[in-house]
Image (cartoon, rainbow, N blue to C red; front, side, top):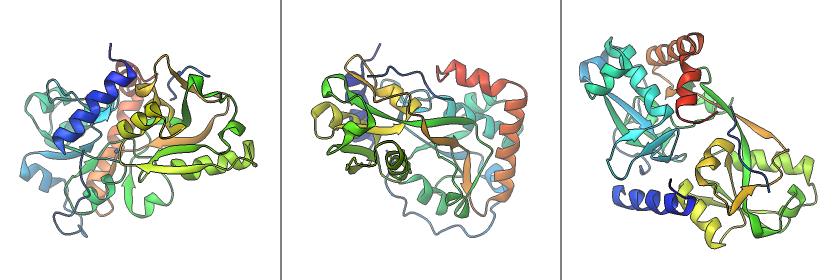
Length: 287
């Protein structure tokens, strides 16, 4: 079993080379897309079929969701499986057939790069813990949620912090392009209005986890199930009874790709109705 620090090291090496809520104990390789013009019309599902492959943006550093195994180079996780299902719907085959035939070309994305990659057509879909918000729906299409989570705050067990008020004067690490900071500010205004915190933004999760471990920051905040990949005996959730910042993840497409967006939305509905989505979530230990 990979420890948190061991995983951080593996994920960090991989990044350099490539240049429902998880139960946690209490106490988004790619570069910013600039290749290709911004897509401003619906390319249609036929264009993906004509190309012969679906281009999908996924996380590379998030076990259970999207992870590129450094030993094999293979992509794995719930969101990787969803991309194979999308390809199956596009090409008229099963998800297993789509995987065996190599019908998905995976591109590593971060919270900062996933939107630009959609805008310029570098990927057809993004399935990368992309939280649905009204503001984001103005820029991209989102399917119905395939997973619902909430935000957590990871701290070192020996930090002395037990309550949200203990964050006063501390530094919280968050991911660039994520909506975590806004959700934290809203929660703190209610739970600890006198707490004054500083936020430091990072390009990816392994870097935040490494900064927490080294003491550069005092807390690591992101969705709770994501924090599960970075939790070991030396860390814990700060005051897990405070549940805030509901995060609904949706499969995302370019704003103009309405046909593909409809296909993805129907896929989520069908997988949910058949109980397959719950089975997929359970198979990746995300319950």
